[in-house]
Structure formats: C-alpha cells, structure tokens
Length: 447
Image (cartoon, rainbow, N blue to C red):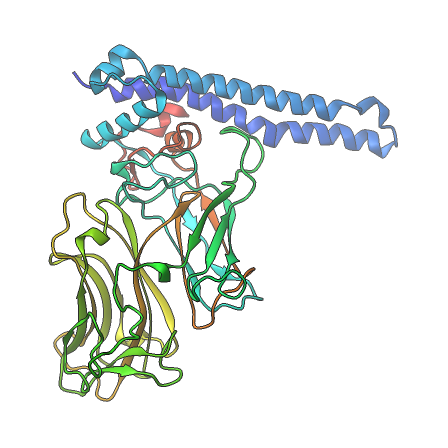
C-alpha cells in the first residue's frame, strides 16, 4: 500500500480550483461593479442612495473569504483521512502541520512533485543618503533547520532547495543600532527587516506582505573564520591562522597602504611574478563552528590590479575535498575597486570532515600575470537569517553604517504552481516541485 497521490490531489484540487475562482471576484469584479455604480450617481451629484453600498460589497468580499477558508479546511480533512493518508504515512500524528511535514518527506521519498512557482529577487538598492558603504545580499537557497518565513516550519527536506515561499512585495532593511549612538563594535551594526503590511489571512483579497522580520547583525560579527580581516601578521607577510601556498614576501603580503585595505588597517595581497601558476592561503575550520543542514554565507571583499590577463580568483569552503560553497571571479572580471562577493551554501546532514576555507588565485596551468596583484579583506562565514521566504545578510563597508542607512529590494512570485501557491498560503509550507514541466502531480487537477 502507498499514498494514492492522484486521488489525494484530485480531491484537494477541486477545493483549490474554487478557492482560486472566488479569489478573482473581490479584486476584479466587485470593485469594478461598485465603481461603475458610484461614478454614475456621483456624476449627477446624487450620492445618498448609494450610502452603505461600499460596506455591502466589503461584506460580500469577506463572505467569499470565509467560503475559501471553508474549502481549505475540507482540503485539510482530506489530508488527515486516517485510512488513505495517516495509515500510509505510518504515523500517530493527527495535527495538520505535522501531516504536511510528513507528506513532504514522503513525497521526496516517492519522487513525487508539483509544478513549481518561481520567485524573482530584484536588485538590492542602497538608499541615496546612506553613510555606510557596506552591502546587503539575498539568497533563495533554503536550509534544513531555519524557518524560511513567518509561520513556515523548518524542514530537513528544504536543505538545498530553492525557496518558492516569497510573496510579491518590497523588502526594506534598516540600520537600527550603530557604533556611534549605541556602542556597538564598528562594523557589527544591527538591522531591522521589514516587508509590506502583513496580510490578514491566507486568502486576504488585499495586497500580500510579510510584515516585520528579525533583527540581524552584519556578517562581521561571525567568528567562524579567525583573522578573516587580515589585521594580524605576527610573522612578516604571513597572516596568523592561515596556511600559505606561496612564499611570504614574494607572492603573499600584508598591505597597509591606504586604499589597499577595505576595513581596519591591513589587507592580504597576492602578487604574481610571471612564474608561479597559483597562490593560495587556507584555514581549517572547527567542526563545532558549522551546524549540519544549516545555511551559511561565505562573504568576502576583493579587488585587483588593472589588466590582469591570467589568473582566476576562487574563494571556497570545503568539506573534506568537496566544495560546499564557491565563488570564482574570472581574471578579466576582477574589479579594480573593493567589491563584495558571496557564496551561499548548506552544510551536509552528516558530520563534517576537516572543513576548511581557501583563497586561491590560479592561472589554470599557465602563470599568473607578472607584477599584478589581488587584495582580500573581511573574509567571513556566517549563518543566514531568513524572512519572507528569502535569506538576507549584511556586510560592513569601508565606512561604517549609521542609524537610518537602508536598502530595498523587490520580490515577485509568478504563482505558476497552483498546488504550490495553495500550500504556501494555507499550509505555510513548500511541496517538492519540478521546474521542467515533468511534475507527477499536474496542476490540471486544480484548474
């Protein structure tokens, strides 16, 4: 015996079909009907007969929302059927959210999927009046232990999966505590995350929003990497806590020249001599510093000399000899001004084996361009906080953030997955999905 997914989603699909049908009326029809009547009467300056009509239409909208919620509860009851679902999941759990979580686990095991929705993240824009020159970065790569959105429980099967849980809105990240006013360590400022006004229910006919999110700090507060700011060189040109592949003072340097460090007073510099094929530094990471199935960001700032012909830069974090997260900048694309880069990754469920981080400048079998240099600063590995279906991190710049500095970006969700949209709104979860059109559970069951 096994779950008959076609029967299950055929039944649920009939409810979803009419939930979506009724959702069209408040936003498209009723407002049009009311405005047509209102404009006709107002044109004759006769408004008394239509007093209260707006309230009647609003009540009608709310009544349809109640019907949608009733249909959704019928879908819940179908999901909680003892014979066809609970017994097949071999569970004594009977609450809806737990069974949704079990359904996700079983669908993964059975290679079942629904049609995917696609979330699009707009460009992160710094406000024109910002003092701080840091950066904000966003990811859709979910992990297995973090709630990706309000009301959405973490799930091990989300690890490494692209989020489809965001709604269409604008997210704002605002600095709320700094080193000048609040006594925080410079570069470790706090930010509040705000989405648009929180929707009043899953089938609210008004615009959708995620509301206020968590308070976060810059990744510079993380201690996973030691001396990632390259301020400490006890031995000349040898950064403390890092292992060198290359010669200190020939290929690898401490650079305290103004403009050649991003923050603090120093940066790490690699210089090619037209002979060596690669230069690198690496650092072992304590296993205790990384949690299994957790999402992290590898964040770093870098710049290089102009006209580098040979030598791609790769910054990566390894588990044993397998790269978990990696960012490569081709030689021709190495910027000449300090630029922020990120690589988001999720740790494996099993125990990590000798994890380490590496900064590598590699000519790929040739030799690094003679007398050219690249500089690194503020290399961090930090946990990724989430809100509204996206992960958001901030990194300090050469000039510290101050209260009121802010960033914005837009989110869009095409809602292409009919079952996925219902699951996101009502069950506050994400089903296993397929983006290639070969899902096993067709949206036609709900249309």
